[in-house]
Image (cartoon, rainbow, N blue to C red):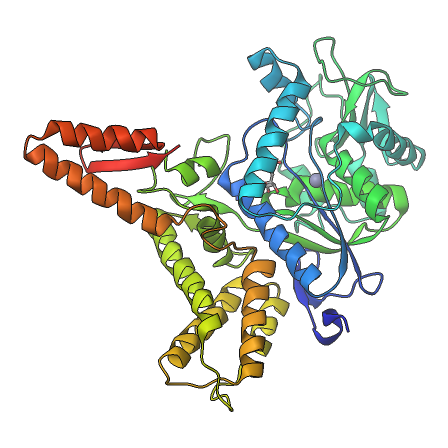
Length: 493
Ligand code: AMP
Ligand code: ZN
């Protein structure tokens, strides 16, 4: 029997602001859409957190035996520099600065995105459609919205008429805003503005002669507005109404609000039953973002080549660090937090390593069924991974007690314990064993630190031949030593 039949999953729906029992439209099937990256730069760790939250959700839904169609798009056109309707296309700008084709930018950063996600052990989505691959679908939706009177054309651009929409619908219901407040808080339109209202947003923008990313349309050469691609691709692959739409909190407004408006204007009803929003990764207490420079790239963490962390951390350790926070909570990245996660991760892996060699008894002195139930209850409560991890550590404690002969376990319970641990650690949390992760970072750091110490001793004895040899031989292995005021640190290339 499918697992979901015995479990009651609850999710935090941003639309209602409540935790609701999750009931898919078609029993046993889930349609999930998550806004993907705009591929004009390397993904930073903040971006990865949001995608990882939904990777975990995808994994748990699959674990419950739902058949999931997971669509995560690639934004390769239409996302302008100001995140609204002005400025250059982010990808075109990068192409201009680097003197390469926009599609070279797209290719480079899509490959980077996939490489990083693979290192983090992400599952591939079922479909990964691109905005440029769905221009025709986007034009069809614009025609439909125009026909229904919720948009207007002016000088080759088409704008969504928010005021008109709000007469019969509720613009702002997802982000908890009122159109009247938005109007009173914005500046007057200036003479050169084409929009009827500042709140209106572009469905199609006329391409100025210098704009290279352009397509023909009934309104002349142009390009689609950023919000439209997600409406076009989610409708095409998941239908007019689907189960889950996800993304980072920062996309709630205007992006997701506009998606709702477009879909309601076109179809007459809302597109999504459950809106899920993942919270932000911060660094030094501030949101990690490309634009402010307050960010770190995953590869800089894996190699240790950064000025923030004391040592390299393996992808699974970073993943474990992310999973220790609830996906709707803010999480701050720091060296102390990563060091603690590394220790915890190692303890979990060590425990999984000894579980096979445990002696079984006739009776169990611990209640494995009750423990297993608590693991499911944690995940059923809006994917509460920190509580799940606390339960996994309860098992770690019990495994040690059994090993020491202070508790007992029956053969049947041991199989159940092992299967449950493996399912949650590897299938649901998506962790990998240190050896699979390619870097037993704790032990490696220990060995390099030992060599650094030996080099210092050699230097103190004026044995420069030995100290140089240690440095050069480590460099040949791809481990660079850096001498600084605080002592010697290392990075791995
Ligand atoms: P973008 O490529 O800018 O469209 O962003 C891709 C995804 O990363 C979106 O879902 C954003 O909400 C998310 N994101 C951006 N910054 C952060 C952050 N600091 N923490 C978590 N998610 C983020
Ligand atoms: Zn989107």
